Image (cartoon, rainbow over the protein chains, first blue to last red):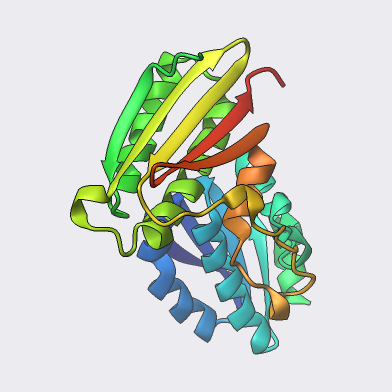
Length: 112
Length: 142
């Protein structure tokens, strides 16, 4: 699991996850994600290149989103594949962190 | 008796989850599982075995730390059995995880068991001779 960030416009940060968000993957990105969540307010979690997610990975995303929301910021999820999206919706995560498949809509959602 | 031809024994350590996941991918290929079933299987192994390693085997002595996994296909159903000698724990009896309504209340505990329930067709548990035996079933047809 690898994590990188891209700036979109002036103040939106896209966090690109790449690989498996399992126990090992979550442990690998946990620290880096906390730092990003602690310093950015408008964040898109790009899961398009995530092939697998389990509860440890969800914990990592929810914790990051909580940190961002606590500062009055906004976090959304972008582009999960159908299997990954099913895990997120079954877990009820989509009701707290909206999922978008259109990047412009995701940017608009965090820019409000 | 259903024949569970695919078997793997791992040590009860988190580092072994990766080997387990690689084995699941290979075995899914040999059993010609549909991609969505292979994904569900991967997910359920991760959740069930991480639980066993993190909680069930936490205090287990070295010689009792093996987790034995077996699986096979019979009549359109994939049967999986996971056995360990850790503390007794029946995931089928655990209370339902309540989906959090907002981020402030979001608790992740219990999510793994919810995923096990939702991504399997059936799940059963028995404890015999100091051994936990968790059986999972997956439907192969949609």
